Image 1: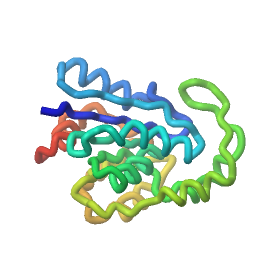
Image 2 (image 1 turned 180 degrees about the vertical axis):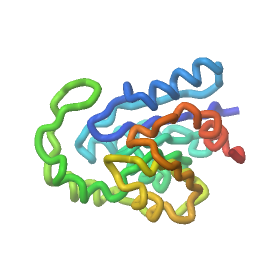
Image 3 (image 1 turned 135 degrees about the vertical axis):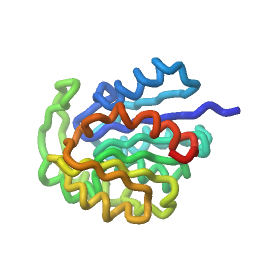
Length: 194
């Protein structure tokens, strides 16, 4: 039997050191689960980001692969589901992030590494080329909190209409209490009714 592959895709100006990635890695370790956990470093340039995700997912069995996509990672997880046929849990995901590039264009500091990353205006068109509507709705689970101070949760609720959705009052962009959802996330990843 193939092991489950759980892939965490972080957001813009974040890293695999993000709290949700660490919480997932720690929780899997504490429960000694037969799950292969992946948390790639995603570059700012959309084409480079897509190449890393493609190289990671292409050899993995889609039916045993689930992504956890946070913020911009949720955008990439959607592209991945529609491209490779895996499943995804989207946590306060960015919807149509091409529209947000102007807000972040220029030099920005990574929240975890402290490194300067340059966001170019042409990233808007590149992101638009990877934008996908969720055609396979049963493969998605949307987790949003209404207190998200960075993204309007209502945009995600509308974009992922027809998909499984959990809308929690309050919270923040980091998704407060994420670790409490991990047992159900794993059940969804395994294709069980969670």
